[in-house]
Image 1 (cartoon, rainbow, N blue to C red):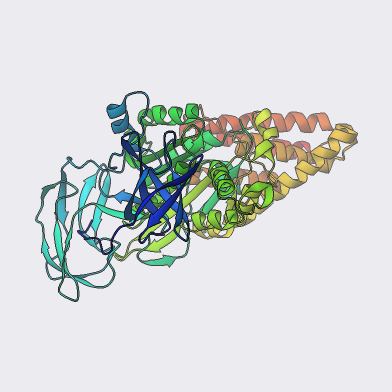
Image 2 (image 1 turned 30 degrees about the horizontal axis):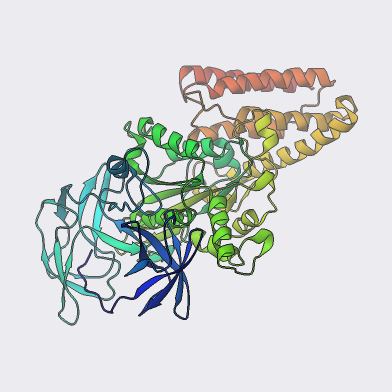
Length: 594
């Protein structure tokens, strides 16, 4: 953070009207869209944000209950936008949509949250051991590293404030020592000789994109350990993904498993407008989950932005932008960040409610006409960049969508599909059959298959061919299954029946995983490649049995062997024995078909 003084006279105003969480303000003086304001009510001040200005009337959405606001209530203008506090201490933190730590709020207010409580995101009293890396006299620009502190396992870089434009000279830099986030650790001179004091805390407007550096292409696979995703619908670092699905299809479980096993440095979870029970479950479970890589609490590399359905709708929008701003900050350190947003549909519903109160012309299903552009602007903040410190950092976004009635033609899903790289469609039919993860085999898609194939080219030169063959078998098998439902199994010719059995074998033995088994819950890429080689052989073999019964019996035995392989430790004696048994069974099946 840098020390600044106001450059204009702040506006003054009074409440003109109240409509739900929307307050109309009669003001005098300079006001800006997005400005943070405070409305006095019953001896306290509640926070809001200006979202529309027309002549001398400003309309603001309030982040707290507007009960008690009266005509003529005093409004204080801050002259600042809604900002995120950025600095050491963000990890292992649970905050609300406007950045107040919920643990501190609970300590101050008790079980029932009171209005008007605003607590800084970062602890002002905690000391951090700062180690300088720059030198006095260095020429620096925004985002250049001045030093670092250790935040858990993260080398948290203290950077030149992103609000500074141009070239600066380091006039003074603190030596190694312990400092709070507000203690000056450097002094810079701009090109006019003006001195600027810098500390470890800086702020950034959450609705403005935070980027210092140059965009780079996406070329590294984000490994989730889920075979259905890594193999069939891969996600790459810096890409965007949406996972729409009906209630009970497993969105939350998939996101939890990805946050636990993904090969990323930082996880940001945005619980946007979900039921309080689900949010409480996340908050209570995460501190007890162990990071499989470091064998320490998963919360040590996680930040949770919490906004339940019972909180004001305006805070849903701010929680989404708060999460992506924190993610951008850690990306500037050269870290790989995963942002999980659950669910963007609740954010869209909040936009619809505010738009209705503003009396704007509605679009499809009463959503605002700018719904698509807002959703796109959020997802477009993902990507890979090369920072000023010559490090590559990335943000990968996985957004859950909750379409009403599982209707994927509704506006939020369609607007999201226009911008994402991967579509993980969750199927009610598969979840009812207990085929988890319930990712639709025919409706899901990914535009990252070629990138994944290039990334795995040394380990698996024919990876793309293997994936395309598997997808072809899946789609053909699904069509044959539909015919079988009409004409019966016996009316299907043997070649088609074998294709159907191959589809079922691949589905049960490869795409499905058991989250309660310590081996099957996570499947590394090396293991996926090895198992896919087995399926390459199976898919290439004709298996023309004499009758349907012998075909079904042979494939059932092969399915059991492959399932047992999934439950054994990789490259263990049991694993090698099961693998040899599978290869022998395939040979026996080919002999029977001769």
